[in-house]
Image (cartoon, rainbow, N blue to C red; front, side, top):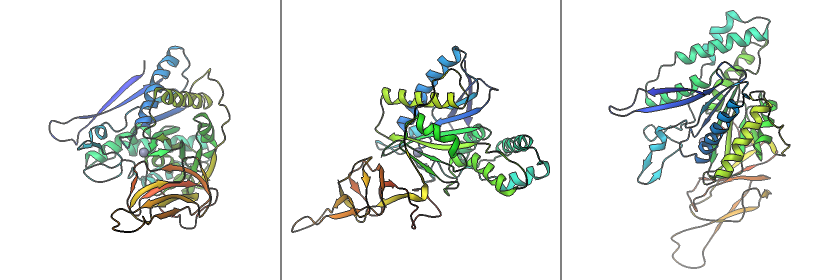
Length: 376
Ligand SMILES: [Zn+2]
């Protein structure tokens, strides 16, 4: 039986309670893998996949196939599951602060460097141990001033010393895709194959202090800060986008859980699992993914669908203006700026001017993409 770790968040209003639940399978095993779903609250396919994974893991535990420690947070944002405004599920941002639920995680590199500097030496194994225990100490000392901060600090505490952090999300309408760090690219490529993801995007610092970069970023920072000392990859983090929000079915959840099990087998957290079958995907830098905005507001008439190969200048959609008083409808084409695969699309058929309509993942880094690389 997994160990249930329940943490009540304290900075709620009087009479309110929020409890975060983590299931820990095979505590003390190695490697340590942390998985969470639905930090953006309305990511239903992600939570469905981890629910199926929980059932699989219980059976695998009974069969004696668990080797690693697997930490499972099937609902990473329980408070967000109640965040409805007049019938609309408001995910992604906390209603009170307006802050993205997946931005603003602790940035502890400077404190960590100061803390570990006197204890680093010539042994990578010992250096990794020193860094890992210092990360745990710093995570435990995090002081939260708001419910939003307390929520993030608790998730970070659970994940910060893991070897793998798999943060499971979904997009609006999308092919299954992955955001990963360049440092962990090699280790996470099998995950893309196991989950049959179509696009893998790489960046070491996308600029938003997102959850999947919080702990891995500390290891990258230490390696950069102390080039004279051998330091391992430490923590491999990624964000998995399980297609679009509407893509919920028992079959898809089972397929995703099976993919996660295959990856857990591949990294030695489970034993007796079939090897991962090959699955081809596009790997690109995050700078090679265009976030194509709507040039004007209006109704969207799509000319391209998910998975289409797009060429620069191609019309991916037309915007039909509303409120025209006479003559033929004057449509505005939405023209692609890069070559690539149409990876995501908005589901609402009405666009605001400037809203990202599609993401097109290509091969070549784009000159207009630098600095802060995430959508919002
Ligand atoms: Zn998300």
